Image (cartoon, rainbow, N blue to C red):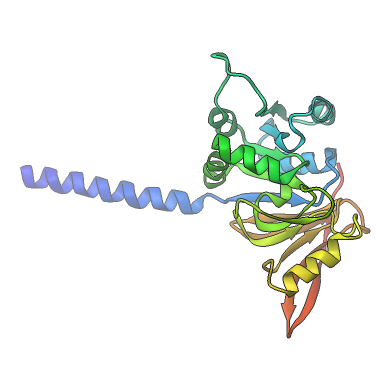
Length: 256
């Protein structure tokens, strides 16, 4: 009897381990990035990605230093959309009534990161441990999204206007194994800087998005290119035979 009991326990243990591995593998890890121009169309697209009737969506405005007007704009854009909006503020004072950053992030169905200063935003996240929590959210299948600083943060590295005088480069969270350029054709210096950085090896090959276009990544791979109009596009930029190759990614037009 004791032997049979031990066999049963071991069988249950290995079944649990195996089942757990299968369950983890079955969770799709999703990131939606767009070049910029935070608006209802992209917010509504994220709502659809959750596949829930009234999802909880958390806005993170760290890049704009929790600017009150930016937060008000978030709530204004949310007014007629079918979800429950929240905001994660990082410029705060302690209070027993507040939830931790981890509780706020992991209780939601999707996270949308706003624009602003990418370098400062990432520094705050790393100091507060938010980067680690976002990785946990990603692994759990919580949708991650954002534009400008909110798109650049998910990649290995890319161009940023976070420093004085000129564009420079910043290291992201590396959830996506590519470089990135937001605002690709919206700002005249973005495209040539990105091309040169990839050509010289300063940046890995990667994805560039115009302001009103975006890319959906599932498990680290692009699954869909979308745009709000025919004038804004997404691109994959790489080096082939010593020259830059800019590949246009045909986009599905999306509307609110």
